[in-house]
Length: 162
Image 1 (cartoon, rainbow, N blue to C red):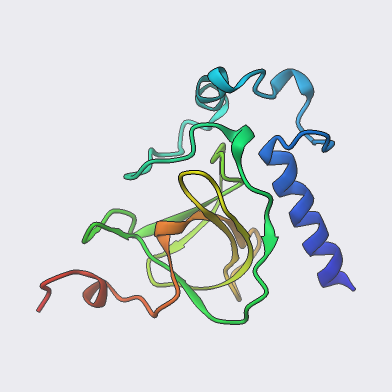
Image 2: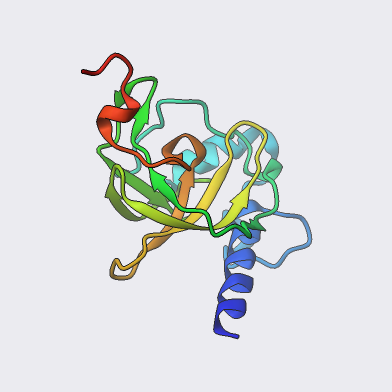
């Protein structure tokens, strides 16, 4: 029962961070993006200064995100800080939502995680993951390129490594 309540809460949080029409949100209406063309500016103005830019394209409009859906698989996953053959995040950051307004927690490249939710978006998909056995906060959203469904080690992921 507790697991179902937590899942429902996570879906609601995901929807509220998504700006879905008709969904009550925890964010006051005065701080929500007023229009699609100002979404990037709104995110930039509300993003914590410690949130770094991504090395790949992100979703420009939080109003166009998908609805988080339960992952439904028990297959393991690993945080993967490698992008285009380079270890760009030795410590992978997990975020409050796909808007990446704040960092909720972090873990080393290669850390095993459980996937809770999946959010398909126009440019970049996100996964809500839980770092098993870690102290709370131990959950957050990770951009798709920073998640692997195959065991991750630095040498396995780097091309031409000997």
